[in-house]
Image (cartoon, rainbow, N blue to C red; front, side, top):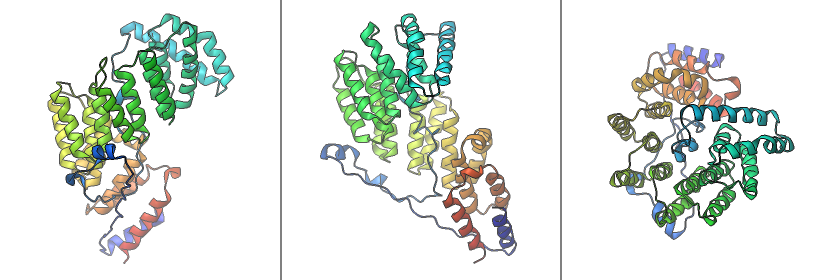
Length: 386
């Protein structure tokens, strides 16, 4: 990389100009049934050609991937000191589970010794929901949930929220069949709720099964004992945003207002993510202003979305303003956005772009360099000498 930059400086002194074109991103099409294709058919306003700034993988921390917050926005069972005490107790059990280092026999033995005490002290399921939240590994969380499920035979019935969490965990493990089984099991026990519907929709969404997600929503609307809520519509907004069905996404947002539901931070972040995916920068900014006007405070994901949007649009001034706000997080956690900014600077006429590219390159760990990026830098430098 250092040698490459030396070559670039030489070409810069020679007064060469940068001309670089990036390949267009192919948009995959899937075969759909007649019923669902009607729902998913793009409108003319959504048919446009997008250009890749560079080949960037979606980071796990983006709003499209933060699924837990997307469909578990419900109030806690406990508050204050009770919640704190329960969380500390659960955290201790979590640490002991992790100390088993994947030993299934040891984990089951530990749960037999201490898990039932949690069930007795928190029959509402809040303790095990907290435990599943604290376990970062989806596979480990699923193993713990399976044990919890077996305890239903010993006078410890699962609650609807525990089923919802189990469906979510199954979705994270990419086991949508298990997610559906848990959903149906909850229905057979007459505890199918908005949370279980939302969890199944989220499981399908996170695994790219947007058609099934929408079919679940159609069934949800026919329920008499529970109704779609803001979490449901947040999921739909995310689904339509991923598919770049802007008309459907905006219609869903309008339906939220028609139903007198209050948009949440996830609502606005999902809308912004959809507009960033569709390269609709003005709409992205409009949603941000709407969010602030409605007294909804942005979070780190909001600013990361805006940073990506300004980077892709080549708006250096606003990109740098947002980067200054989230610099520490990006530098430590988001190589994907660093690559995006490097590509943006390389296309710009900023006289200080070389220094800025150098500074960003230093932030990328050696193991995070991708072959395509090395090829791209070589081609970019060669253009300076052509």
